[in-house]
Length: 284
Ligand code: NAP
Image 1 (cartoon, rainbow, N blue to C red):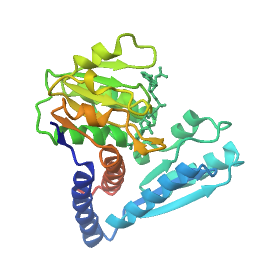
Image 2: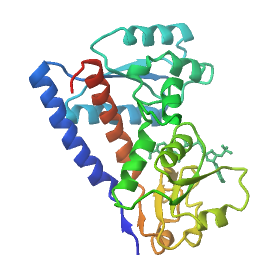
Image 3: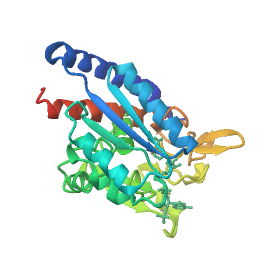
């Protein structure tokens, strides 16, 4: 039976550390790290995510400001706001909550954020740094996934991993981070053939597809580490992408949903924000 990786507890510990770093920053330099979050439109899930991010900032002492723009906001209005925040020295970090309304070009908007303030790590500069093995800002969910895998104490070098999902937000950056740690990585997606066999050969499985309990317990190699990124709302409540009950009988370690990757994503956003402020203020 697998050990449960308690993302909530690990995230709480990280937040404690950040809280004392923020305190030291204020005490020694009279500077409060600042995060600005931009929300366009009224997607209910996005509104909850933004609220949770604001609350988490408050918990550790980061100053967070929220810019809520109407759904009909023009490209120019949004780009002007980002430009103003780029130039505001009290704003160390900027996050545009996705998804944006479809008439706005997400790539253009993300590229408008100054790479030094891009705490989501989605700007092509930061993506390029990650791919080159010289990361600057690493996207929050993949960074959290790596922390969870490392919490098991398992040596990664030489292990085989399957990353299920190839999004820019989760799958691709996670694959590059694992590769950077000398893991042999197979990235799978909706056109991949023979998925069960591929997963069955993996020492590490990262499931990020958004399909409730898609990965069956019998596909898990005995002793594998299973990281379940999926958040799926079902009639029975929240479910991950992995059939948790059966998978935990075979895995060595597994993350629950909720309480696994989710809390780590927010903790890593806070961590990137403090990092951005430290770099901008040359505070070591
Ligand atoms: P996404 O952009 O929709 O990407 C989904 C990926 O899964 C795509 O690469 C897609 O393949 C692949 N896929 C879909 N159905 C598949 C199937 N039947 N077999 C194999 N691959 C399949 O999703 P995302 O943003 O990466 O998020 C994935 C999940 O993680 C969602 O449930 C999301 O809510 C969750 N999530 C959680 C957190 C957290 O903090 N816990 C953060 C981000 C995301 P194609 O590329 O071929 O279409």
